[in-house]
Image 1 (cartoon, rainbow, N blue to C red):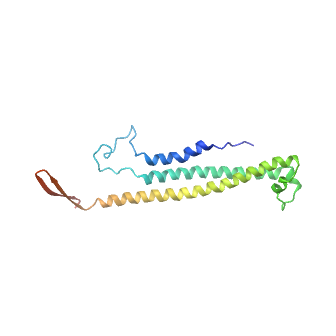
Image 2: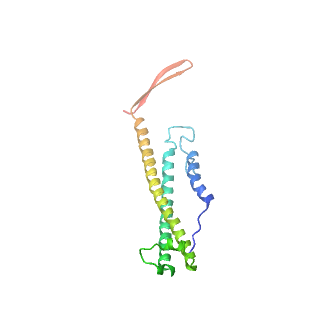
Image 3: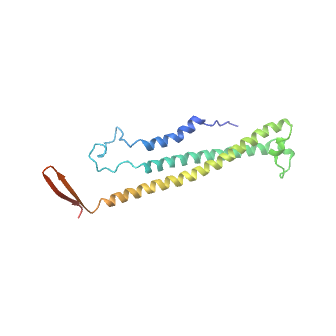
Length: 181
C-alpha cells in the first residue's frame, strides 16, 4: 500500500494566500494582449471586477477540495479493506468493533490495526471536511460570478439614455447632452 504524504502547512498556507493576493492586484494586460483603454488613461473600459476573480478562485478551491475529498474516500476504503482482511479482525464477529478491541489488546497484530483505525478515522474526518468545503466554495463561486455578471449588465444598462453634463471653464459655460436615440 502506498503512503500519501500531506502537502504540509506551507503549501496549505499558499493555497489560501494566492487567491487573496489575486484580489488585491488589479488586472494587467499580458504581453500578448493589447492594453485596455482604461489602462491607457482613455477611460470608458469595463474595468476590473474583484467578484469575478474571487468567484473563479472559489471554483478552483472547490475543484481541489473535491479531489482531496475523493482521495480521502479512497484512503478510508483502503483502511476498511486492511481492517477487514487482517488476521486480528478474524477473531471477532461482525457486531464487535475491531478498532475498540485493538485498543485494549496486547496482540502484535493489534498494533498495526490501531494505526490503520487511526488513519481511517483521520481520512474519514478529512473527507467530510473536504466535501463540505467543495460545496461551500462552489456555492460561493457561483454567487460571486453571477453577481459580477449582473452588475456588469446593470452598468451597461445604466449607460443607455440621455446624459446632460454641465461644462464650466475659464470664459466658457455650457451644457453637453449625449446619449443614444
